[in-house]
Length: 354
Image: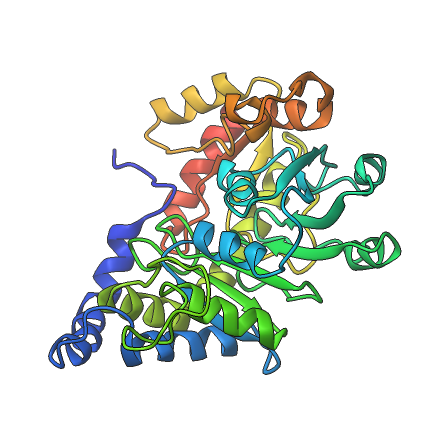
């Protein structure tokens, strides 16, 4: 019995391999192995698929680089506080430290996003930013921007998992193109999207040591955060497949919700969710994962270790009760656009038998 994979990258690669080869050859034949025209084309396509002519995109080597550079570009006093959800990947919080700022963790609600009532309690005179993380392909809480305006905070969005969900009025939004994401370079990659021309220009320069190119002087602090021509070509092509793949994920998610609604709990998925991940909640999560694994069905846990549990942050994590409860119950099941009907049925059958 073959394995039902969480991310079937081999099927994706079989579909795009020839086109990636042709596209990347155009850059490599001109001696351009990093940046260049193909990266610019990927940025333009990213602006198109995010449905906003007002936003500008800058592609980085990682979402972490994009978030760190974006936070630096806000020009906040050193040590300024950033509200960040307790339930997220560690890179969200470490980016705050790398930008010279201080993360202040906030518990989450049933949508796995920042609980605005808890956020209100955490605001001090040094709080400058709320970093809102959208998981599973959800869009941002419509009250997040109002909350920030009322409390004189800048709004930043980490939408690493939510490419395709509606953009918002954040200072900037960051995205990820790692292999587990809906659109990928098959390697490393991230992006910063913003309507703020100053943030955009500083981000563009910041990914190349503060330079517009290697022959110009640096105007500020930056890093080497360019993706390769082959990664850019892969991203350009997978961005072109985004709508088709998103439609398939939503179809699978609707089947799961219909068939499993009496057996498992689900996160609060937003109406416009892209379902980059499909998560179920189960009191016997680890036993369920083992049951699926024994039937050759891959699962994932997002996240087995939360930032609040990492020693680097030195947090009394027992105070984050909802985050810890969700962590114990949550299991990510396959929701790959290359899943066959038989594979979807296998997943459902195993979940129903547990």
